[in-house]
Image (cartoon, rainbow, N blue to C red):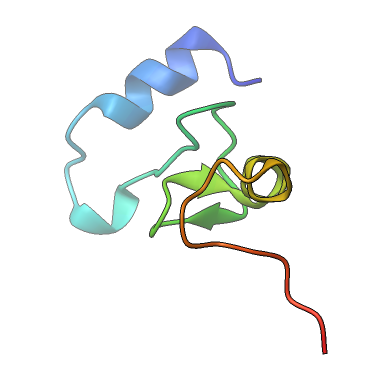
Length: 61
């Protein structure tokens, strides 16, 4: 979990647009972020396996 100061800094508009930090809305993780869902890879996998993300299902081949 990130500190509150890190979350607050990520919410601020950066001086340059390349400094934008996108965080998972569920846990606040910065790395492994998926823009389409707004989640990190860990939270995405948990929610997808529980069937809580519509249109996503486990693949097998």
